[in-house]
Image (cartoon, rainbow, N blue to C red):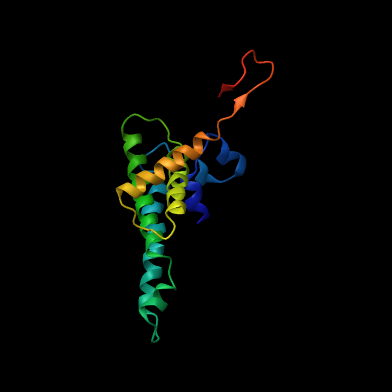
Amino acid sequence: MDKFVDCLHVRCKEEYLRKKKPNLALYRNVNDPRLKWLEQDFLNYFTSWEEKISQWPGNFTKPQRSAMFISRQTMEGLKMTVKSFVETTKYLLNHGVQYFLSEKLCQDPLEAHFSNHRHRGGANNDPNVQAFGYQENAIRLQKSHHLQCVTGNTGRHNRVL
């Protein structure tokens, strides 16, 4: 997992040298071995793990076997992340980009936003359009309350930033 995280979080040109971690090097070539490793070795590790669980001797129920592996959602998320990352990287490098910093594809703000929706939704895991819109407005209003008035020797009182 450390190699996986490094491959997806390349931040700057020199970090791999400072940290002595080659997986933090820039992506410059569509034949970068890390891309092959992600698609083949990394994803195949999970496929192999899942197959071994299904063949494991013993009288295990389906829920028991499922508990021996990562969640279906996590597995699908890993597949989607790896495949889209590899394709995006190759596309960019094939279309004139000299090097690629993988951290620029960070989804943290998007994940945080939808985490707010899940939090507001409570037990409702499948909101309709109206419920989603209501939650979106509530989140937007909550963010707008973080604006504060600036006072002091700025020449203007109650100026909003």
